[in-house]
Image (cartoon, rainbow, N blue to C red):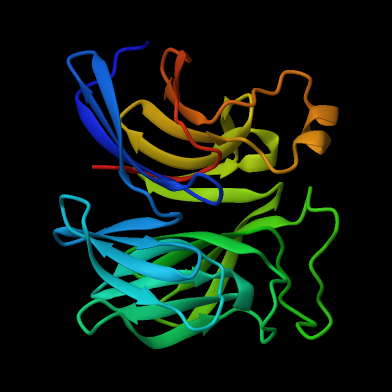
Amino acid sequence: MIKIDDCQLLITCCNQEGGLYFADFKNGEHTLQKVLNVECRGIAKYQGSFVVASTNAILVLNEQFDVIQTKKLTERLDLHGVAVYGDCAYVVETKRNSIGIYDLQNNLNKVDEIKFSPKDEDVFHMNDLFIYGDTLYLSMFSYSTTNFSLFKFPKDLRTHGVIVEYSLANRKVMSIVHRKLFQPHSIKLYKGHLYYCVSAKFQVQKDEETIFNGLGYTRGLDIKDNLLFIGQSESRHIDRLLSQHSNILLDCGIYVHNTSTKISSFIHIPSKEIYQILLL
């Protein structure tokens, strides 16, 4: 394994065999523990706690990863990414093409939402978000700024994915910062550069540059200095991907990739699909 400075990660796993894992890197070794046996997707830090999205619920965990609050939704919204802005959790409601705003100081009551389409069916497949200052970055598999009522989810997603820049202060889309992405996920703004996964191409990009090529579906990303922590899932589209990639690796786990030396290590995670990685 490559040299990894002492650090800790939380790794969310979604769908089948989902859960929350805690990885502790210390003295050149690592331990891995499943701390929550609930399907998990987005995760964000909030004061001394963590906000986690499951398929149809929002959870708040304490520092020991115990569930201290649960918000079960009455409508199936297919929740994905989570970010915290002020005292609210911004949660991607993929089914409704929206971001729900939930008050963390008031029982996770929904206080507002940001709609990107009037349709209440998934046409954009919005998934992950990242908030820096008053700017929100949002990844989605497709997007249209016109003809919302006619727009349909495209069958071929290879060139439809985007990352959108949205102003929380002005409540409007400012720009599309990246286009023609094949299933983008896992946005991270780090030292002035935007990092993200182009999942179906098994890649991680820094702005417009590809800086990592994996052997499977990349989703989940965090950064520490020159180290990238990158999730790899067992894809649900294995037949198609096998026809396009002869070197596909079916294992689920995380890559630790040194961007200076270009050397990587791979750590197996006993699940099927990684959603997010959060560096503590």
